[in-house]
Image 1 (cartoon, rainbow, N blue to C red):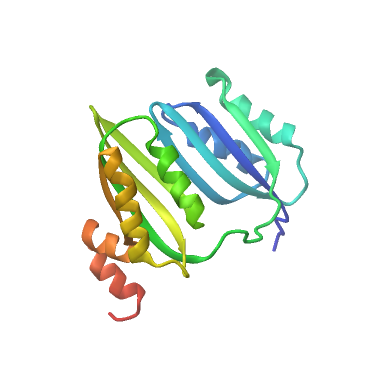
Image 2 (tube, rainbow, N blue to C red; image 1 turned 120 degrees about the vertical axis):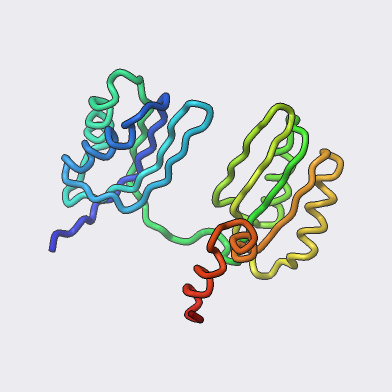
Length: 195
């Protein structure tokens, strides 16, 4: 079996169009890599992706950047490559929670809320928001350290959001899934071995 011991983190930002993910992954595969991690999204017409690719032989950042750039030549991509330094956990472990916030959009929401989360040692794993007219809805995935009192965090968060004209809260990810996803109850039962 081949060993893919050289890993790189690759970030690409480019104007969105059909086929971009193909045009990024194809040259990586042609270089002999195996993609071992990926997170991709589109925000207001801009495509962004972070990929972890493993290779059998060491590659230079320039070789990887140029290979991707040749496939995205017409789009002036921003490509950043760095060696993957390993996955030493530096973040607190804990429970996975979903943060929801909604209300009238205004500057400073993220600054205020992310400062609160950082002070509590809460890690933001993923964050998405959508603006519809003057209304904004935020949904975030958080890892909350086990030693924190969730009820107290919820109360403090609601007190923080009220002056901003926002409502919101925290739900354990399983509770959020059960109340927001079709078929989530059956999936949770199967995952917990109770089916």
